[in-house]
Image (cartoon, rainbow, N blue to C red; front, side, top):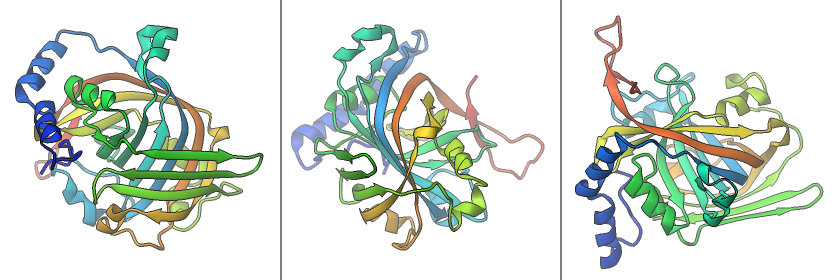
Length: 302
């Protein structure tokens, strides 16, 4: 089953019918036809309180989650799985300027893996997306193939700050599989430890890998074999980023991914960043050049 099918309260008739409407081929194909001729309207928000949590995962345990043409980023048999959550501020059309304040400010969480650089640099593929505002669920699913978000109206993201301390509590419950309850606090210093020190030479190199992503890939909700690509731009001041450590964590998906309770995640906090959605394109399959035995890979359509 496609992981991006609308899941909220499927035991209730209204949401079951609503989910079918959101993946209606008539509506989706009509929108796809129109978007071939209409310009993409750039989206923007100023996001705050962004938290990144990343774990190293055995690539052989997770690569089957995606079809064969997709190749995950890999280093010495490990790939990276990240959960991040943040608070948008007036996420809406860039062309509205100051009037963008009429748009709501949703909370969002992205659960994602990172793709091999030879496919397309600085690209992630979504395992899941969670948002707490139904307006963005409807807009993202009806108007885009790259934003099939799930709905959690009880999404919590609380940040308490003092002169020296930073305490964060987040709680997400989409279903029994995709749920998260985590508490984090800041730590002094910005040193990489354990396996992370073998992957990134310095702290700033890790930030340069995680933060300035440029593309996101998502399986289309009505045809999982087809992928859509969102093109994004993230602007942040690395000097303001603070290291975090997890104090409490409950996330059933981590065990499914083979992540043990004693694993060392890499976590950090970004107080402010500018987030832009620049466009959306379908992803097409193309055979690797020069090697008949190498599997097909995916690249952005021209």
